[in-house]
Image (cartoon, rainbow, N blue to C red):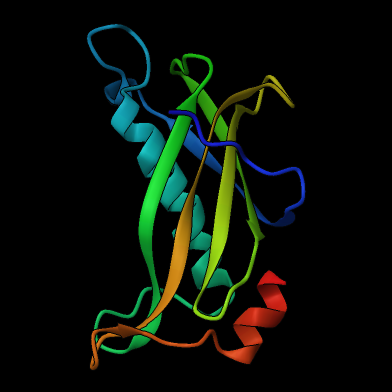
Length: 139
């Protein structure tokens, strides 16, 4: 099943991630699990940049699903440019989308993925309303 990344989304963050020789698998390309790690790095770095890092004992973001569409094989050495987008803020959640491309091949998407990000209260173990300041960023 392939999930579609919507055209209507807001760019919020970009970062470069080095591909290491050890990230490759026996097939000679970056292992599929690393794509999810690259998506996570971009999402968590963006959250930290807005003052909302994961907060295991308090209130903050958690993801409730994640996906990745693989289009081309990434191979080391090189750098991945991860572009992070947001869309669809709801009462307690919003969507995050990330595209992955090589820095030496601008605008060639190698993979794209996303996650539903839920605002969560660890003390009550329940979703809570997005704080207004977060809603302003993701709207």
